Image (cartoon, each protein chain N blue to C red):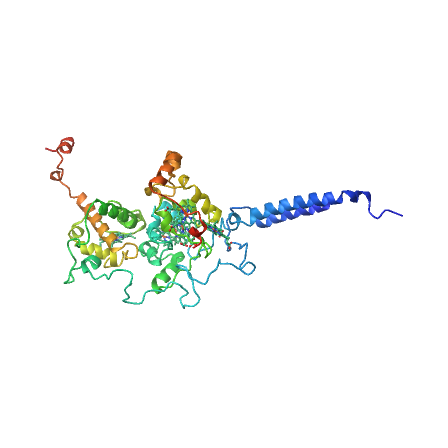
Length: 214
Length: 217
């Protein structure tokens, strides 16, 4: 009888040494405890999930790229050039915000949030080009020079949509919806304004006094 | 006539019963330890085509998760970034690195980088990132400290029990809006007590589904 326990103990030691403990890192695909061939179920359904692979298409992707010039039927037709391309009817960049964009605190807060996620790593949270990747060699433009101060709103919008003319900065159109792009443009304008303030901008008398401005 | 069985065999039935009980106990322990997602999935860290490090990009450089996983707030699926997202920086940083060759090839040809999918629910489960991330649940609850991982490893079991554990008591796991993407942040309950968590749950009318049809649609 003792041998039976010895064998059982040996089996336990063997299993533990083969299978290890919970939480250890491994690189092979996770074990399927109830494999599909033995326990047929609904774990693997004949459907494609986003970004999954497919053997049907030559490039191996289940997500199909949009053919050229396709317009999604689910979205409104983006005919408004000022809103969606930042250009007026003559094809020049607009210098004001399109009619659909109302600049209020909500838009600015949204712009700030989006700016800090998508632009600050390179342009810096102050817009001076001192982002975290500057020291690794990304030479992002500072917003605080005359060329960018004079730049039309529509051209900043276009830079976000299509990237910079030299394509050193690429497009962010897949990450920012047109409304969000305008919010970011508004925030960039606010950053620029923040470096051009003068004493005359402070209107509150109490604040003027505390700052020592007459 | 000699005895057919020795005297000791009288104890045999009892011994067999005891052995079966011990053996059954060990086998049950083995199954619960080894055949659940806590063992089969946690720690899964496949070799990726590019040795991309979250510890460097999200931790050290401080990139927001949404810089790359840009759909996580908008859709059920949290996308793995396109190669263009990498080229934003890597057309200037380490632009000749051999490690980044697959990304450059992908950006040129439009073929996908064959990233290995790590966290995957079975097809009969409905899961939605936006529904969680916009309602106070941080990435760290389900993915662990990604911002400290050089190689992404499956940190939580993501089993049905794991989901339900939170769905039954969300008050201890929710975070304020500004803390969702900061994986080092504390939950509301850790910051100011479970009452504050309960208040958040009732203010925001958070009601995670507990019925089968909530997750198996």
